[in-house]
Amino acid sequence: AKFYSVVSTTVELLSAANRQAAEAAWNAGRAARALQNPEEAVRRLQTAISITAKGCVTHTDAQAANEMRMELVGLLDEGRTGLPALHIAAIKNDLGVDLRQQGHLEAALGLCRAALDGRKRELGREHILVANAMTNVANALQGLERYEEAVEVYEEAVRVTQRLVGRDHKNVATQLNNMALLHKKMGSHDKAIQLYRESLELRVGSLGKDHPDVAATLYNLASLFAHKGDRDKAAPMFDRAALIYATALGPAHPEAKDARKKAMLCGVQPSASSAV
Image (cartoon, rainbow, N blue to C red; front, top):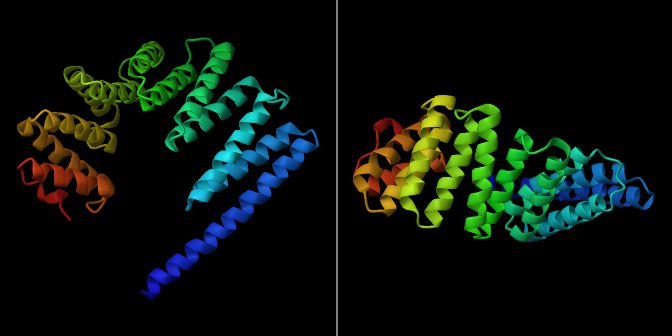
């Protein structure tokens, strides 16, 4: 009990320090904005957002981080920062990804689209940063359950990525994995299985058969087979995923424990080396 009390006190102290540092950076950013120094304001606001996001422990912290993000967006939209267009696009892209992860999907979509448009203007359509921005737009659309739009954007991102880096690149595997999840949500299970298998093949080839990303795709594929009631196919995939996770991350890692549990529910005792 004493140990947990010490840990709790330490977290509270760290949180207080984070809040003070974030508030100082935010105030400095606002002061720089008022003094017509937008470039310095952007830098300070980015620092405040980074500190707050990393140290979020309460709902109030999360709200403060989002307020800072919106203030930074407003500053960027004024068009007086003096920053290169690609830098502004990168900031908006990162802000969009952050907001999507926080569940603010409409705002995330707007920022990701703005980042995509900015990158297209500066780089053209055939650039890996454009393909990455397309993927972020598609992720936001998927979160909003605008599935048909998301499919179109994902497919274009895959085409651009393949033309630039080849079909066997790990980025293509990630995009295929995302598309598979989308088709699963749409109820297109056969298409999802096909895409998961393609992603798995590419990940094994580019990352090696024992990489955690390979385990993630195995887990996703197994989950789909389990959903379809095909436990015979699901069980060995869950088992293999559990073994990879246990080896790479440790047997007590949540991913390893979850995959092991799913394998057992499918009626197959997982590999001994994947158990705690």
